[in-house]
Amino acid sequence: MVNINTISLNRSTLERLLTYYHFINHHHLQHSVGGTISSAQIAELSGIDDTQIRKDFAVIGVKGRSRVGFIVTEVVHAICHALGFDVTTPSVVIGAGRLGGAIAAYKGFVKQGLNIAALFDINPEKIGLIIGDHVVQPLEQLDIIIKQHAVRLAILTVPAGAAQDITDRLIKAGIKAIWNFSPTSLNIPREIIVRNERLAVGLAELTYHLKQNSQ
Amino acid sequence: MVNINTISLNRSTLERLLTYYHFINHHHLQHSVGGTISSAQIAELSGIDDTQIRKDFAVIGVKGRSRVGFIVTEVVHAICHALGFDVTTPSVVIGAGRLGGAIAAYKGFVKQGLNIAALFDINPEKIGLIIGDHVVQPLEQLDIIIKQHAVRLAILTVPAGAAQDITDRLIKAGIKAIWNFSPTSLNIPREIIVRNERLAVGLAELTYHLKQNSQ
DNA sequence: TAGATTGTTAATCGATTAACAATC
DNA sequence: TAGATTGTTAATCGATTAACAATC
Image (tube, helix red, strand yellow):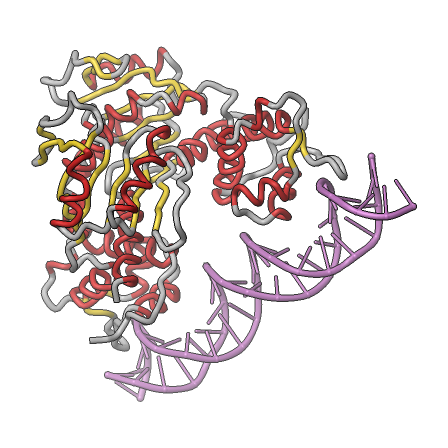
């Protein structure tokens, strides 16, 4: 086993690795037992430069063969391992609104190792509702469930106004990483990992280009 | 009025502009009539280099004053104009599931000029349901509504398996831009603008860093 | 004026792409 | 072998940061 603990993948690299993974899966290439694929073929599918692909594979410890290419199953396993998909990540979802419910009910993230231990809401009327496989829990249960399941990841889908309070509470309860869907910037200690999912950026990009094209 | 039709903002620039906009709004700076702000102050708030900020402002036509800084309202207006927030963008949401419903019901995008003309679903059981201010429409209404409202933007929240078929149909109906939340890659003509909102990337980034930190 | 801040040029840094020897 | 493909170094490109004259 190649030790990849010491290497550090930046966000662009992670995104590219996920792109390779997606295209390989999408084309059902992983089903061809012992099948191989060249960096040029992946480049053709994904639009990413073939030199870049070979470098990325080198970083995650995948070795290819001259005149043959890379063994598909090796690539898939290495990407899963590098990205942590082969480890289950327990998590909690805070906010049982439409977005929180969508994430809690979505099965696609399970392939990435995500396991949702519980879904919380502050609204008493929502407590007890069943969304996906989850019963909406009151926030009072937060500490207990986080400890019980050794949860380190929280998925935040509360309104902007409530985000900071909940965040402080999550950090006190031992959360180490926050996937933030609230349209606000969180004030957090440096050691906590945050990913702000700013959907507004996507919309801005589209409206901007639409405007450009119509002129 | 500065002509910004000819300039081209890339994705990083758009993201930075939105960041400035967010921090200026978040700190209620726009309410200070005639108030000014320096690039160093925005740098402090946003973490973006002050030289970069001055360059971005130059690109969107905002002029500052020595020893004073930039007039807040001018900055806000210029960003809104550059990003197209001052123009209403009619759109349709395809897929009245939890995610589609969340987007259709969310009011935050209105500030960016987004107007949702209709919400569609293929499932007959969902037709007629009320989500937010919208009645779920059958796909048969797609062409009529797109023409009626001159819709050019479609927001796609259908399962991966249905995404390509719907996309083809949308393009035939005259859609020019697609905000794709389906976890799949769409095959589309070059002239159509697509933004793939790959939430899996965010999750991968977090699980990767959690794994790194625990070793 | 002195000094703070802009606007812009130059330097640095990192990411991407090209080139090509090594390999099978 | 000849030729296709990897692995890696070198070159290019673009984005970021530093420096600093101009300005008020």
